[in-house]
Length: 142
Image (cartoon, rainbow, N blue to C red):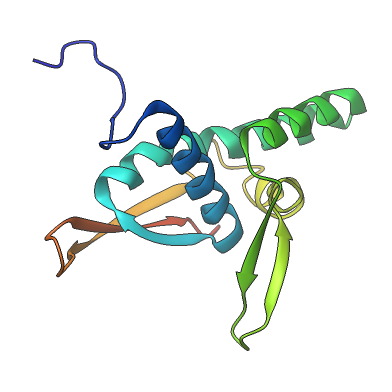
């Protein structure tokens, strides 16, 4: 029985799980949509939502006191990788600063939304090992 056992182990050590969570959340922020297993998507979804909420609160409270925004940016920088190399549609590679994109593009988009920034869509089973796959994406603002 798994009474009061929090989180999924994903057959990894704690350091490997922490690195996996950081990298997948950073990829979700940079690409705004990732395809992964359902278990990993369920694991990183709360972490991604918390990062967006941290950025939103930092920006909202940072208008009165800039030190609050700096503090929120530092917390985000401690929990996320510095940058990601992303390939665009033309085949060129571009370096994306994760925290900068979170605070300047994503958090203002959800300024009026009280939560529910991500959507998980199941897409069936992976042919190789029959693992349940899912697309985790940031919702579009209506």
